[in-house]
Amino acid sequence: MPGGTPATSTLAVDTILFTRAGTYKITLHGAAEGGGGTSSVSQEIVIEEDAQVACTDDITLLAGGCELGQQKCWTFSGVAGAITVGPTPGSGEWFTSTAGGLDGEQYNDSFCFSFDGTRFIYDNAGRTIDPWNGYIPVEYTPPDDYTWLLLPGAGEGGETRIQLPEGAFMGVWDSGPSYDIISLTETTLVVRSKIVGVDGWFELTFEAK
Image 1 (cartoon, rainbow, N blue to C red):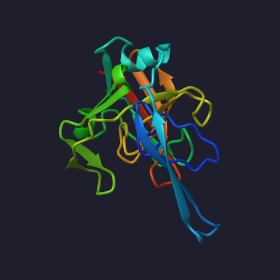
Image 2: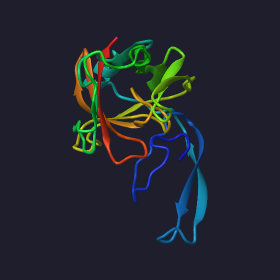
Image 3: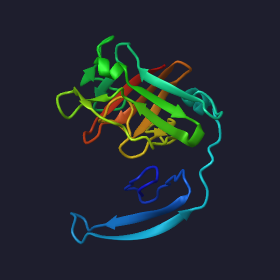
Image 4: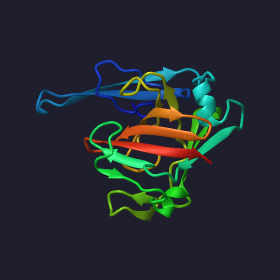
């Protein structure tokens, strides 16, 4: 479902959000068990109007408000455990960061949410830590057309979920694009996300910028 959120799904029944009016192609891929007999069929749908998102308390905390031009940015917290990694949600057996122990390139990243147009802006000051290449900073220019969506009750344990488009991420490149909110206040945001390509979980702690 390119242009939709989420952009792909393997569920038998799912709900896809298209935030912008337009014509979109949806493709169903099917295969026999084991991958034999792969086939696909596509159909175009027309979304008549841009999505209208109602203002909620969680949106106000996350995005700073619901007025035109308002947005709120989050950066990694300097506390111990700002990044924890483990095999199950909330576990930290594999890795737990120390106080102030992240790379400087991680502390200068900003993850911003705007209610206007539900825009998600990732400002990495030019470089991002590459988890697939020795955890070193690399030059990276994030796309500027990302959006976001809050899904109450969609988390693994019934939490509210931040849903970003396919390829978008918060905090670490090998997380997302779904983030379950564990705690959200005026100053602190704690989320959990699956690790991309690995059977494990991140827990990430951010502070308001």
